[in-house]
Amino acid sequence: MKACPNQKQNIANCNCSYEPCSRKGICCECVYYHRKNDQIPACFFPPEIEKTYDRSIKNLVAIYKSK
Image 1 (cartoon, helix red, strand yellow):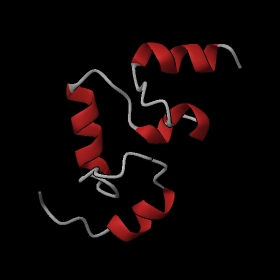
Image 2 (cartoon, rainbow, N blue to C red):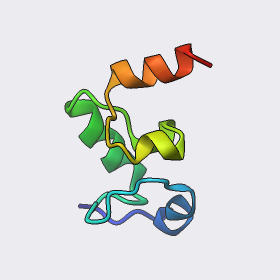
Image 3 (tube, rainbow, N blue to C red):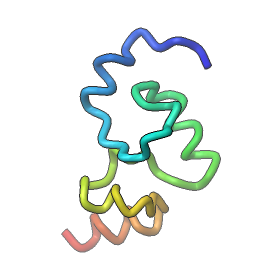
Image 4 (cartoon, rainbow, N blue to C red):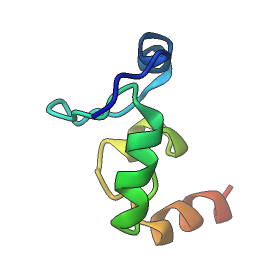
């Protein structure tokens, strides 16, 4: 992985609760990883939903549709 000059600032806004995540604060890597797995990154989800680790597109749509 390439070093990210914004990693420190990004981590301050990252709500990913997956502790062994190697992509924390490296948003471009995170987006790439989740996109290739048909998922959405944690930062798009409310904290209580993010902790379920259901980062599916279907779940994201359901959350925002119900608001």
